[in-house]
Image (cartoon, rainbow, N blue to C red; front, side):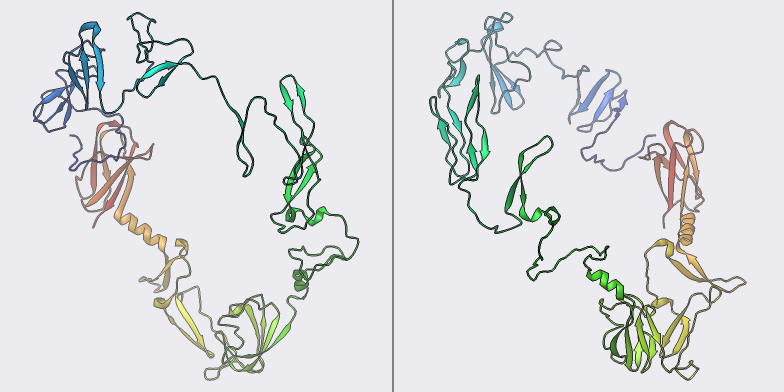
Length: 506
């Protein structure tokens, strides 16, 4: 049995490749626009709403006339779509007129044969004339006539810039001349060889003005190339594109005009200029006292929104006790940055002044760690004013990564150990996939293929794809039990040719 579709299929203007129209021996009840292949007449038929219409079986429409030719028109106005072919006369003297609001297009060559003999025809104008050699067909406004081809012409040149285009007629002289309004171009003497006239042009500095550049990024210098295949070619460049390294050595002190020198490399030789980075690196890490620190108000701001300008080696002395990040500090404690732009407590060194070890009732120097790995995994530690609190705080954990491989569930082992365990999210996904889905290839060749999914229900969704092309395919699917489905194909397929993806629903 063929696959049953219960709704229309929209191919969205795509092709239905390798399609075979339904073959049938007895014509069914007609449905308008239905197409079938009649095995009795070996023709394609379609239903027009009242009856079955047969195509001629040779690729054309059934009708009168000789096969392979246009049927003979026997009426004066034979309809051709929205147009008509009107005829006058009879037999070989018929005149055909295409009466259409569009146009008549000839896909092949157009040949007019006046005497109905091979290669004796021509194109006739409104005066029934074929014209003479070299003439052209032209409209006179009221008819089409043969005319002589025009022989006169106008030579012209285009002016440059805002100049007006000028006609050049026979006998006129065309002249290039150096101008004060276009200085720099000089016309050399003209030479002629045969029919070729050569007009050399050169650069001429006469009448060029002397002035300073107004914009170094747009004003242009001209220079000549004196090597290679383009020897002596004139090139141009913006003034600010010439590198300093292209100039000769200075013979006097270079005045920077109160401007700085930027993007300089660190020095290599003894007499090289020192850069800011070079100097900074010489002193980085040295203790640089920056003053006092009020821990009660975080002044200056070292732990809330610290400035990125803080450098390694900067140090502060606590002048008012309080908390520095989560650590209690007292007057006299010394805070030293271990790196540039520190933002975390462990990026500072705290030198305690006079605080002893912490006790159960006295705030002091102390440290509390969560024991692990072991049955205490999952505990969270909070620390405030020297007091540590330990407990499970999963609800307030903040996710710091979206990487699947880093995600873990905290679970309790109900077995003998009674430990808290970390369960990777991949293990949960693997269990869910195994319990709710199945994937496998057909085991043997043939037309019937059983896929045993063991999902315990007939409420499953089945998708098939070709294992060689990876394309989705369709076949008849029957849910034979709560553990298996049977896929039936119209023709035999090889083992492993299709793969079934089965998903439990609900």
